[in-house]
Amino acid sequence: DADVTQTPRNRITKTGKRIMLECSQTKGHDRMYWYRQDPGLGLRLIYYSFDVKDINKGEISDGYSVSRQAQAKFSLSLESAIPNQTALYFCATSDRSFNQPQHFGDGTRLSIL
Amino acid sequence: DQQVKQNSPSLSVQEGRISILNCDYTNSMFDYFLWYKKYPAEGPTFLISISSIKDKNEDGRFTVFLNKSAKHLSLHIVPSQPGDSAVYFCATNDMRFGAGTRLTVKP
Image 1 (tube, each protein chain N blue to C red):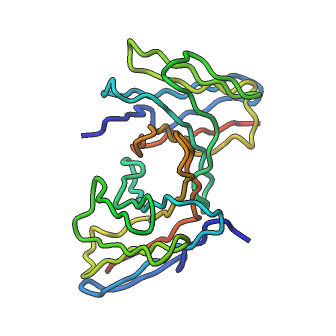
Image 2: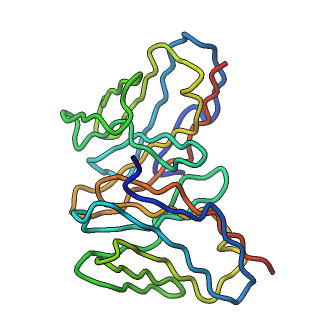
C-alpha cells in the first residue's frame, strides 16, 4: 500500500464547482504539503502544515483552502473552480527533523472545463 | 519570480555516458538542496541532497556538486542507464522547486 495516498487520481469538473482533493498518509509524519505542477513551472507550493494546528499559505494559495483533519489527513479544496486551476496536484509529507526530504503521493490530475 | 531555475527542459544521452543536469538559484540564504526524480503517473521521489557546508555529495552513480559562489548545483549520473529516464527536479529545503529537466537515456 502507498504511504501517501491521494484521492481521486483523476477528476473532470465544471467551472464554479466546489472540489475537494484528499490526502492521507501512513508514514507518521507531522508535516504535510500541497503542490500543483504545471508544464514549464515545476511544482509550486499551495499550502503546508507542520502539525495539526498549523496551517500556512504557500506561494500560490489564492483560490484554495485546506483542512488538516488529523495528523494523517490533509485535504485541499477549490471553493469555486476555474479553468486555470487545471493542473496536476501533489500531496507530500515529511518528518519534522531538520532538512528531511518530502514523500509524495502519485498525484491527482484535475481538469476544469 | 522563480528562485530555483532549471534552464534545460530536456536532455538526451547515450546509455553508459554521463548525464549532467543543472540548477541555478538566486537566494544565497538557501542552505540545503535536494534532487527528486519523477516517472510518469507517479509522484516525485527523493534522490540525493547536499548541504551548503559541502561542495559534493555522492551516492552510487549519483553525485551532486554545489558551487555557492555561482549559486549553481549540478547532478551527475554516471554511467547513465535507460531506467534513469525521468524528469529531475532540484529543490530547496524551503519547498521551492525548479521546473524540471526531462532526461532520456537511449540504449
